[in-house]
Length: 249
Image (cartoon, rainbow, N blue to C red; front, side, top):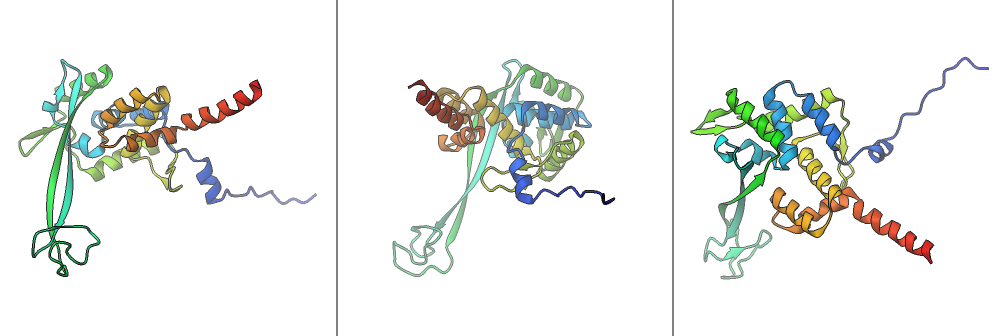
């Protein structure tokens, strides 16, 4: 018998990607929250998961946006949109237009007009998150900047660092993008995804998905419906019903 030690095969990238999860579950988010080293970081994880808001919305959150008596937070979502116009006749242009449809002249450089669209939505917040927010405000956590009392007072890069560091301390693996198949570290947006998937798994009725659309701030219901695909409940139920009917005949 040879004295050589058997070498364990290293899994390929494809095998690793196949085994990787697409989203976090509630228990993993709880461990992420517990891994936070300060109240601010714990609150950041909790707000992102319990509200399903975007990271930009969480970082813009002010003390005045929290209604402790009603148990709600008001979210401001700003989105910049660019419009292109002909420099000669001011007709609207598409991004691929070389010639103006209005005056027919060749457009070498279009006139760009930037507009910010503001959308407000008021979201319910659970009692635990409200109490944590109240404690954080009481301790003087908010940061005053440009006349605003910002809850977190950090930039986007720092927020990503916080979530990633918490994930590392909690021992959470990378997540796979269900559309591209690429692996990504646990990020603030993955907490928004976790909230949406959990909501769909609990109740994927039409009314529930429309409530989820409102909570997430999606303009189109089609964007929200993607989470039904990620959760996988609809496809599995449809498939099993096919065989249940077959076996019953």
